[in-house]
Length: 208
Image (cartoon, rainbow, N blue to C red; front, side, top):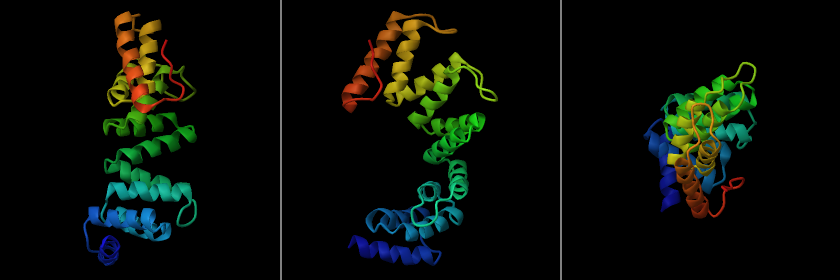
């Protein structure tokens, strides 16, 4: 059955056998099904460090960040998110960007979140777009409406309601290089309404 297959695969992974996908599935088995986060850490560590499997680096980083299966360790979490991001895992890049924002490292955050956005992570596209709309903070990125719009468009295309809402507001009020445009406002307002309706509700989003 499923559990016996996972235990058998676990033995292969512990012995250095098995491919990245199979060993990642073993890690998820221990983390999600068995609730054995310590064992999951072991499996993910080998799969991340030895097999360079991005999804395992991401999951391992999250375990370190939450303190599941062992000590809470931001440094170890960041290390695994860096590896996962370098391997092209959007979720790892997103978390790396969030950690950079918490640490006040806006430029590093933008770099990581942009990589996540390149992997079609809508939340990351939205965050980057939002940063370019804000007045510049000390040491941060300059306000750039054109860049903000491009990232918000990417997020909106991926179904991110607040991004579509911000674009609607941008066209309703106008902004640097973006003239008022009732037709574009209606386009993004309707897209926001459709997404809100599909999701049931999106907190903080209201188009009028």
